[in-house]
Image 1 (cartoon, rainbow, N blue to C red):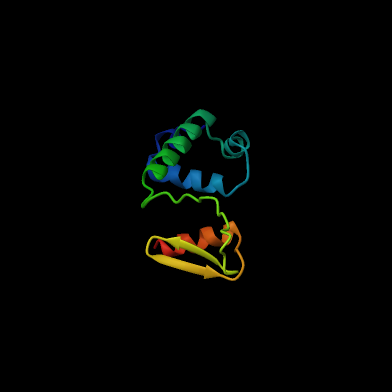
Image 2 (image 1 turned 45 degrees about the horizontal axis):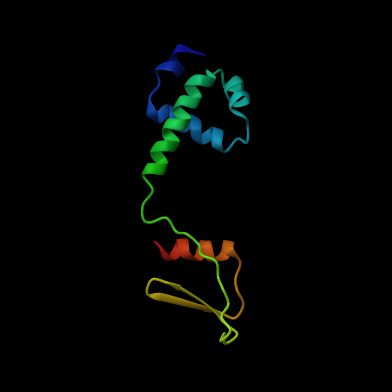
Length: 105
């Protein structure tokens, strides 16, 4: 690895990590193709991921199992805080997750 890569700071490594995460390569393959030391790369990768996860804003949303009631009117209702959503058919979990993410903005 070049001495220049060793001395680079956060901005350099944040760019390297961003390229890695979009590359689909293994740590070893990515570093080999760019002349980077795997240990240094992993140290920055894990450090930046930890910092990113600690900066998440807002509460973590958790899904609870939906249990149909015997008095159901044929529609599905989902209540999130003060908001109640009504669906004719239960949407997919992916759809609900994206909808809730957008509502949280």
